[in-house]
Length: 77
Image (cartoon, rainbow, N blue to C red):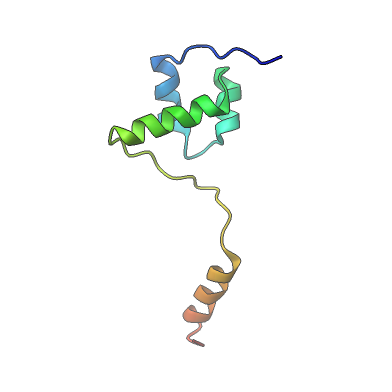
């Protein structure tokens, strides 16, 4: 059975805005009692309205790009 989503409040939007760069959508949703899809909806709606929301900090790095950058720093390329 599907869990019903509760309506998003102003405090939810504020919390997502302040913590989105440091927490995953699942963590935020768990803390607020909303789904991760609602968290992503909040982020998308704010971005559509021109609000700058920082990108995720914890993204995986591209290992090939990192290797090429190392070579460039060592001036081997």
